[in-house]
Image 1 (cartoon, rainbow, N blue to C red):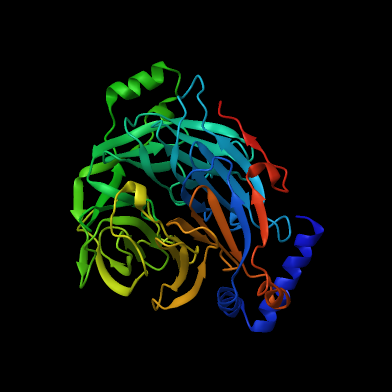
Image 2 (cartoon, rainbow, N blue to C red):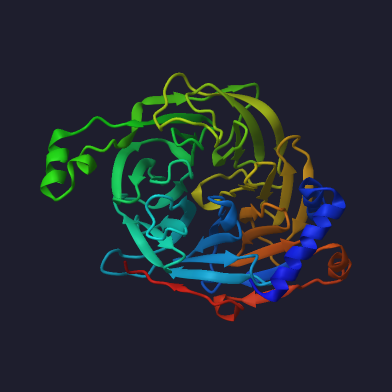
Amino acid sequence: MNGEAVKAVQAREEEVARLGGQAAYRLQALRTLRLKTVVKESHGTSVHALAVNHCAPALGNLWATVGSNQATVYDSEHMGGHLAVAAHFTNAPTQHAPGGGLQCAAWLSAQGWSDHPDGDACLAVAGADTNISVISVVEARVVKLLQGHTKEVAELAAVPAAPRLLASLSRDGNLRLWDLPSETCLASLQTDGTCLAMAPDGRSLLLGNSKGRLQQYDIVPAAADPAAVAAAIAAGSSVAEATATRLCIEGASRREAKCLGSCHTDAIDCLRFLPGSRLASKSSDGRMFVWRISGGGSSGDASSSGEPGGGGSGMQLAVAATWKVPACSSAGGWGSRCQFGATADGRYISVGNSKGDCYVYDSDSGERAAHVSAIRVSAPVRACGLSEDCRHLMAVLGKGFVFRFEYTGPLAAAQLDGDDGGEQLDGKENTNSGQQEVAAGR
């Protein structure tokens, strides 16, 4: 963090104290968001996903985008008011993988399996080449490669409570569960899912489908395979390693979540579990729900205890808040979905529409807290993200455009009212950071 960034942090701390706390600061930020930075990513095609790192509070400054065959990790905090590039990955062909377009991304907790005791930020990306690449930001290279899908991978899901696990969903409905340290596929089954989320306790998976329904699967201990145990020991594994409990997706546990009251009628294109036993969902027509969860063998709360492996009846969902995002196309389909983002505490949800508008909603009440629009680019917003202090709102749209709206404090806000451009970066080459090019090899 440079001197300018340190001064900015001190100024924000003083403002938080003056306003009476973080909650008041967040409201002030949302009411005064202005366009600060426009990035034209070098691939010049659609950005398909944007993911903010909520795996650890210390890593919340990092967020990532994927588009074409590239993934870019940005840092919003350590260069003062500027946006920095922390790492850039091109999914080029190698001896290990054919390379190709990327469609989805998910941040991972590296606790217990990273080679870095002080911590690492790891990003899983996947897409058209059917392989899942796990990138270490510290090492600036691919450290894990998960192979097995036969169709384009469209969704990835992981939670800090189960740091070894990653779930993936391909366009043909193939749902897989992976053990990251060993790069092993633990389970594979066919579904009709269109989007995916892992419960915060790591004990179940939730899928939305094209009919607006929600389906739950349990993650349970797998029965030991004597032949596999013997093969592992013969290959040099210890008895403890060979007989360690493995997890799988229990196909027979599939059950439909029961929605109490109204529900989606169009294809569900995004799901997010929220703290406090809640779930947020969005369908292609722009209808959003925040649900209170009960039952289902999983509380949906990141503070839940116990080992993975739930069971019982399906979860029940009671409507806590609902709203309609204006001007959303209901065409549906993988290529036209618009994913939403949420703060780590689940209080605020950011989402875009088909015309380049971005909105922030209070998940408790469903009330709109902010509305900003892209300039000179009229295209659907494919994904949004929001920083935990609500000071930065990021959106991706058009041919590789990343818009960052920012609250810079009470004095700068008046100046920004007359600023129609803000800082503009034309591709990764002109950023002001020490950019790392991620090695595609292993």
